[in-house]
Length: 200
Image (cartoon, rainbow, N blue to C red; front, side, top):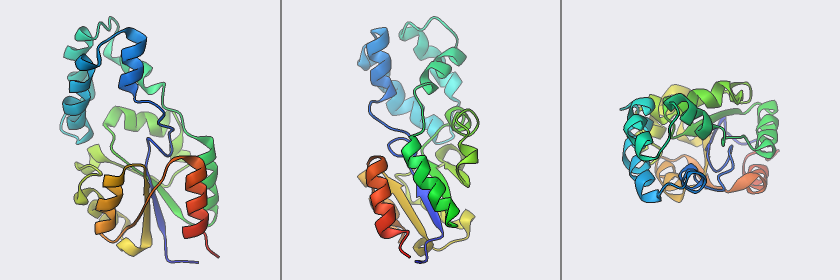
């Protein structure tokens, strides 16, 4: 058995399949130009993910532009409904936890979706903890994100492995000495876990 004690897992792209971005789905289903949608996700939404703004408040002026006639809450319900955990990935995670590994979600999230993931999807029953960017006030593209996680876990970088579907995030975590792996989907994840973590 190696010295890995904690496993950090990406949300969108690993725990959740990321076949399409929500902005693309919404634009298509409601006939809204992407040019009207993307500014929100590139600017306002990122502030929410950093814990510097409230998603409901940031959405209000945009929903009118997007011809959404219902409430902010109903929009979030529609948005989050596309979020579903990949059961094949969860099976691997359950196996890891049975072997004694601690598994955590490490993800750029704002507070409402973060809570939805925990409660509505019941992932708090599947994982040992959650590291959200809005709580850490830093994103996965910043070293501070991983430094805060290591501090909270009271572990050295050599005792942690990180799986993500974005090369930039993998490279940044690697710079801190965290073994970080670019991964895509359940099959890829299971293969890498078997080869690099669960070596008896």
